[in-house]
Image 1: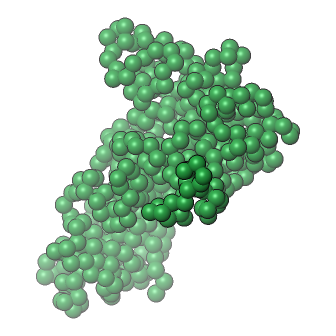
Image 2: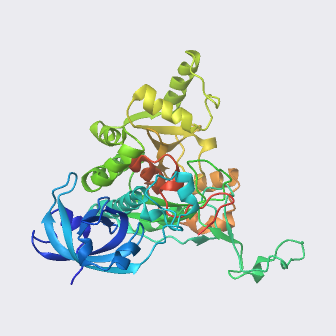
Length: 467
């Protein structure tokens, strides 16, 4: 028989009551006695299990004994309305087939609760848990919402390279890509590594951002976005950092900083609304188990326009808080890069609404941001969210060739690596803007999880590249 999805059966959409249906999935629990047994089956399509009611007299006892937590089975039977609480339908089994056993002595995901730290050690099995099934379904929906939003607005999905010869951020925190024998590196006459012998005949790395390439496309296609993995060799072993993470980066020709803020706010609200509309079963589960305020907080960010303030105003608020006795771990002064604790104070305690901070000091921002007339600040903008801090960062890009070239030189970005980027400012340049959304930061907010390692299937962090 054709397999039915459990999510559809529980919604009353998969088949009418009384029909014979077939489901396939993994056993979450089995309980019962000599008269009747109940198998909770999950196929990954929903946080909810469907109950399989089994009359032990109708089945081989060795087969039933082999159906334990974690086992994979097929169950065929009559779909009926459930008499038990918390479930709408169940299946009265007429056939059971065992696909794969899960020895209770070895299978680590028994009914008892497991810590998130332990589950990271068995990341190959954690999708089987309710928690990570919910997280990964939400991750899918957020990726789909991103593509849907930009498609509906007439943007084009643009693929930036993962292997690059340029450092977009100029920070030097990049993973090198090479085919050279690390135990016998070729050297040039200066005693340095001879990259002409390497695969690409030059030094290359994994990308930290697709922004520069996306700008090239925006200056031809109008509105584009990249969405893919990025890599940063930053030795930050914190709950907010990954060495491999996903970024969504739209770039739009003819948009100034105000258009950029409007787009970013509309975009992030669209994603949150999509989660509310399409992932509520999973969100409620995560709220019950990890973050009691999650559902209210999701609605909260949709209720009001984001507050827009300048960096200078933000510093004044923080300095006033310090005068009034507020203790911060990191210092507050004009010119400092805001720490997460500063960002969260502004959002959660002072303004009590998501905020967009603009006009940052140019010394703490990247070379490509357009400078303001004051010569001190740039048209950058960050969106700050509760519990997360910065969730989106962007700017109006510098469109003037001479200014962009000078700023790159001041920040020691080699011209030989970005000559092609500079050249776009010589041929039909125009005002344009863009931003980057850290996908895992969005997922932290939508799922209520506290550690970024728990919203990506196989986290890559310092000294950890398992699985």
